[in-house]
Length: 391
Image (cartoon, rainbow, N blue to C red; front, side, top):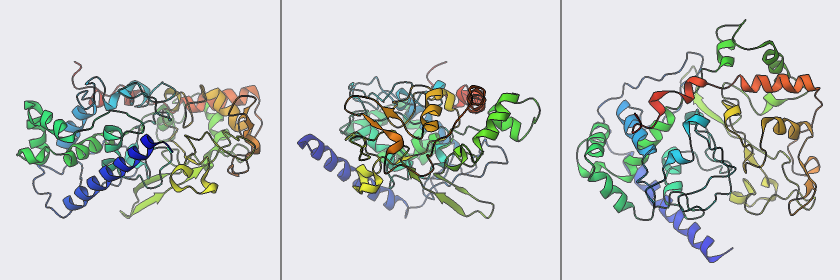
């Protein structure tokens, strides 16, 4: 481990712990200064309510502020980079680059995940079992050093910029109450998180088919593809389950109790040296736990808007949906040569759910048609989610 990596990890841990303490302290303070708690979710009746932190209830004022902060380029070291730089609305708040590229040009080892329905994610990022709160996760891209994303180093300068901006003065006051002390890093991340939780996608042709127009909402081919998706032969539904097509999910059930499921899987994407190894900078949950059995385990992302979120896998190493299907049909990817050579289907740590299957050309097209029916055009064109600075 390099000295830079060690220093970056230590600084990030200290920063996160300090921030966590501020959040815990805020939980014992009154939330009476918030102007309103009448937020109306724009979700259909068949989708359950998300679980919202008790110290950060949803309000229209916070969502509005968070939207401006999400697109705020001054929240980066070069004033040219924002959250939206790696989470683009047209791509369902993902990024068409293979891996994310930060404000300084440094590459992240991982592909940018979609933020669609992030309110329902039981865990955040690709492979961190302990990262469960958007309010905590937000500080990593802003202030993290390994890798540099937004590249911020001085939170006081950030807060000073916001305090001197007349528009932010008003929006913070509307969301949290008046006073310079309300323009804080804690409230900044609360607003950002509130906006992200508002990014609900539930109006795809497939949704209209399942809960409305049974006849014409999707094609006959897509209907056949749905049956394949849910078949015992393919078993796609085992991991991509439920209303959000993921087996890591959190929501409120009909009894208003929290339901939480967390899972990570090794899909045989790599098998370096025939020992099940993954590239050293991308070992999945193993990178956090250091447990050999966690090598190559990553979270299953939602399939909503999947046709828009290429490239695929945690490292963006599969370019198209067609190739993704081929990967799973083979029961793991074979890399013939180079430093990552190996037969993924023989990975000894691979999930037992990844066993392979055979498809005819028509069946493959049907499955692709089904996956494309999960695209929510209204989501990627919703003006409430767009850059407020663009008229």
